[in-house]
Amino acid sequence: QLNVVESGGGLVQPRGSLRLSCAASGNTFDYVAVGWSRQGPGKDREEIACISRSGGSPTYAESVKGRFTMSRDNAKKAAYLHMNSLKPEDTGIYFCAVGLRCTEFGVWGKGTLVTVSS
Image (cartoon, rainbow, N blue to C red; front, side):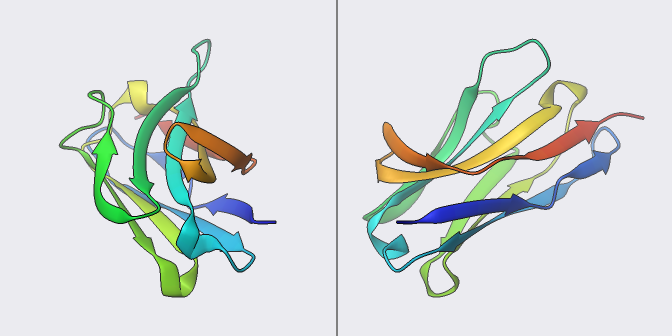
């Protein structure tokens, strides 16, 4: 059973950058898709980035495309979300998840809070 823990959230000014990390435990990280989602205040959860278990280029939501970059390091059992040009509307709790595919996540972390404010 995989578990994931997010870190790296915090307070950042608009147009700033932040890097989130997702650390996985367990032995099957190589064989799962990894994704990031977020939930802003009063908003539904939004899937924002994912890398499939076969690797390849990440997919992104339109709201973050061009500003966020996702990567994974199977040797470290980790995934990352590099966030640039942050906006106040990016504020929210960011979650990492793993699963068989980007449309089927089975394990979620508890999230890390990102606040974009001056």
